[in-house]
Amino acid sequence: MPHIASHRWNHPACLAPRALHPWLVHPGSLTARLIAHFPAFKVRLLRQRWARPNGDELGALGLRRRDLAIVREVVLMSGDTPLVFAHSVMPRQALFHGYQGLRRQGVKPLGATLFANPKIRRSQLAYRQLDRRHALYRAAQSAVGPLPAALWARRSRFELGSARILVTEVFLPAVREAKP
Ligand SMILES: C=C(O[C@@H]1C=C(C(=O)O)C=C[C@H]1O)C(=O)O
Image 1 (cartoon, helix red, strand yellow):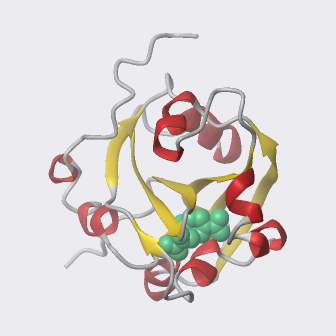
Image 2 (tube, rainbow, N blue to C red):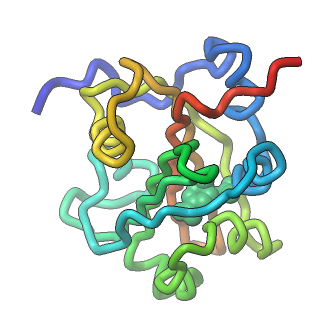
């Protein structure tokens, strides 16, 4: 396993390209913003199955290495153009205590569910650049094909009482603020 220079999700978003920055720091539903900016939005569901979270996700969810969670991976699309690779980790405890409905999420955007429930709190957003040393970069690349050497990603927890899920969004090249 190549050493990842830093597991830390603490890269300042201000270092991101100017055209990407508004997307990275957007506090509301990314789905809603993508629908407002791009035509023919759809969710391409890649997988949703029991799996082990990535090493740098355990701490954020208070999990041990052997703990299982349902891992959901999708590509948010505009027609045939991939916009965002999203990876969501839903621990067993969360699925049985609060997030039962997420098991049948299918191609309905997660955001449509999470932002519709006023009891769900979102944590601070955390950012980092990913490259081929990170599992999420490699998963995005196998889903959409060749990518730039580094991609900006953000992640946050969605908390419902004691239940927490971790949602990570990897921004693909097509997502840039329209030229002013
Ligand atoms: C959390 C949101 O849901 C989006 C949709 C996702 C999905 O359907 O799996 C995952 C992450 C988000 O990009 C959002 O819209 O902000």
